[in-house]
Length: 202
Image (cartoon, rainbow, N blue to C red):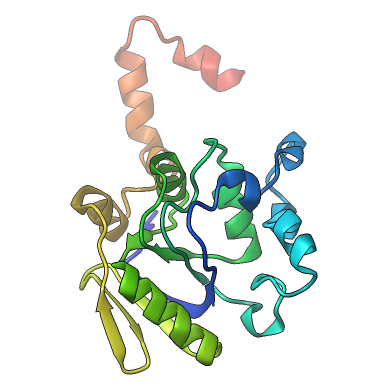
């Protein structure tokens, strides 16, 4: 199973503002869901209602966008993994921002969603470019560590350890377990405290 993430391309959606927390991304009432299905409909729901159709996630020109362009400390607040799940269910495949809350960042990595950082001026420039031309495609290249939209190319940053897991496909811990199931069985059979036959049958 190969889960390499080297580039992400798609239209962008600008979301201007600092310290957008996970409760705004997906309100606590949605945490009662048994699965993550349908969370996309609730992403930013309270902000969207307050803005009465003018929130970027409601505007027609941004429907189908795959790359969210945010500002500082995006995803702060509680550690709920429903926040990146809701973004993913809406269609977001990658994020560009000035900075991300650590737990939110980790939850995104676990789902294969790169979060790359840029300087404040670059974030604003990308947001302005997408606002001016919502149909323009953005490409995030994790190998070259750059983002490109039209003729504009800007450097992006992501921790080297995280970057290498995306490029090699090793970010997908569950996928690695499934792909190496035979080796897992061999190792488990050698452990005196694991009754593998009983576990496999249950």
